[in-house]
Amino acid sequence: MDQSHTPPRPEGGDDSLTIAGVTLSSRLFIGTAGYPTQAIMRDAVAASGADVVTASIRRVSLQGHGSDTVKILKGKRFLPNTAGCETARDAIMTAELAREALDTNWIKVEVIGDRETLYPDVMELIEACRHLVDDGFVVLPYCNDDPIVCQRLEDVGCAAVMPMGSLIGSGMGVANPANLELICRRATVPVVVDAGIGTASDAVIAMELGASACLINTAVAKADDPVRMARAMGRAVEAGRDAHRAGRIPRRGRAEPSSPQLGLVGS
Image (cartoon, rainbow, N blue to C red; front, side, top):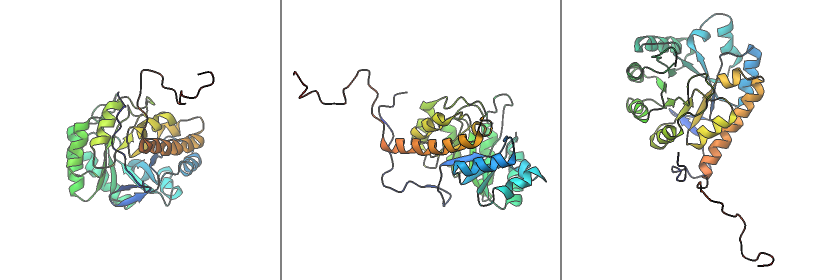
């Protein structure tokens, strides 16, 4: 990808992220699944600095382990998701349950079309999002890294779009930077890179390409030290955002000295 020309960057000191009128202090969204213990999950979320935590409604609505998640993370903004749903109907029903259980109209919509790749079913996803937007939800859809799909989701009223960096849980990072940069450049709503982030450098790349935020779960939960990785991810998102706003130098196929050549000794 040619990054000689970077997309326009916002100016000014205020660089807060706002979604549906809510201003967030962190550009890292963090998941709550797959940690070795609830205590480690709690400490990792705290170390990340994230305002928004995601959870499957099936987990948080269960008695015991699931309901403890809400209590442990009291004060965080929950973004329930429709993980595991394969039809628009199931996603809509799950979103309605989430609104009732957690008293929030924010929903991350997932409609999976393929069990091996966990790719979204685009037609079912758009149908679900259209219905939920009309029903008053703040909809953040997980989608493939397709600029046209992201545009369609924006058109039906989604508050943000969440294109995959790469396959869910794969740790492959940003597989298609050209598409992601195009999505970020065209979108008029926040772009949250969701899925595939494996380590801090992946998060930096996503943010340098213009993403508004990153949603990270597996890379933190399955790390040898989840708390340390969560802290690293929080810093990486900040660093990538700063680099995007600062603007990278052009790539060149030749060396260019950083010091002036005039006045060298012996010249």
